[in-house]
Length: 123
Image (cartoon, rainbow, N blue to C red; front, side, top):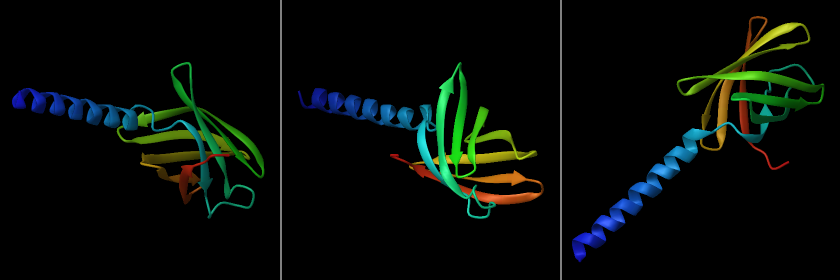
């Protein structure tokens, strides 16, 4: 009986562990996040980004003081994500990596590199 109880416990533990790992890795980019981009020009330094899955593509909508920007496709490469968009006539490339309750990355535009940080938002 004791060996059977240990097998049941280990099976439940492994199942719970696998579910936790899968939940963290399956869709780390979803929902509403607050972003901070302190080196950006006024109006772009903070706002929110909402990640969504649309037609098997990861997309996002960014809202800031200067308006709203749409990111039509975000591509995954290993643990990192990349996307591109036009901001006031300039091409911006964003590379970021999600961690538990934090996303960090770099925004490159016109030769500038600016760090960006995202945290979960309840807004």
